[in-house]
Length: 491
Image (tube, rainbow, N blue to C red; front, top):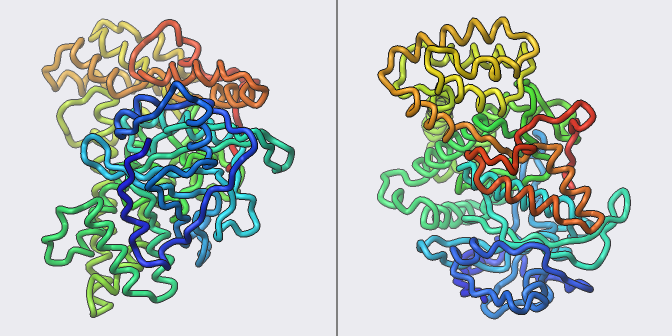
């Protein structure tokens, strides 16, 4: 089934712990991503779902697999933990996809590992399906993220506050190396380990850096820019990760771990959904600053490799942190320029975007719907077509009306046909996102054995930039009684 070509398991033994998945009682295939399997070059026998479920749940370890739990540390809500590691995840192995890219195949919820810290190493059905939904949605929205290969029911309960159905999630990633992986070796003052890890990441993710005069400084800059670009795109779709700990930031620049994540309903820059984020550390507006803070922690780890003179190494690393801020601001403005239909960059565009966001905040406008309705305003040109629908998104329209006039003046400075501008805006502003209440609806039904809501939601998210009447209910903000106020980690 898998054509494994494992590299991380060839690293020194202190990088991981060998561990085999723990068999489960009655694995049943809930969802298999056949399109992704084809992309990965995986030959899956769909005619025998029982055996496929046994493999994907970890009951049968396929030939060539080298199952391991990766070691890492991390800052969790600002507090450093010197040893975390894969407590409920097992890296089964790596494959080379059809484009020649190395991809990890990981089982989440396949039993305890040496890093489980008294945990059971299992996963509940709800968090597994949430990760499946959101990771595939992010991919469809054009945001780099890990992927979902499969979800498998275990036939066994897991015990959290209450008994819940158990499941295994099969995750695909460019790699699972995190900032926390570097912190693990830095905390042990293991310079050889740091160098081995950095060389591995460069070879796997940034081979173009191999000829740089200071390849480790170049690595820091490459990761910083990848994360700046990623968070800018999060902001553009109203995504709130919810737990931006250093062990949840990858060196590859992919979004990883979707436990308490959520999407904005009405625009509020300080919005927090995660039940464990009591102080709002990872609020929507704080995400760029936290990403920069996390990159600073990576820089600390890389200092011994960047230069023998610690002061000089710190000075050059600090320049990268400044560059992160500049890169993020540039990418953020680029994302939002596209969202409001601007083709060329003019001075004052940032203030124009902030003006709209301020009006949305004051008017409690739904983030996704307001931007989508603005596309129709653009299509109407100067005649005001679509204004009423756009303004209906606001409880207080005064600021929005004023903003529209300023925006139309700015559009007049660019000779772009209305239809062309509107089409470009529709390609930048999704009609459908994984709205929190719709995700919860699908998970609640799945816990009672009904996967129809889950399947329909996945169908709606496949083409999020298209207006499809059959999925119109997924474009509508929640009613007051449907609003999701908190999301949970699910571990």
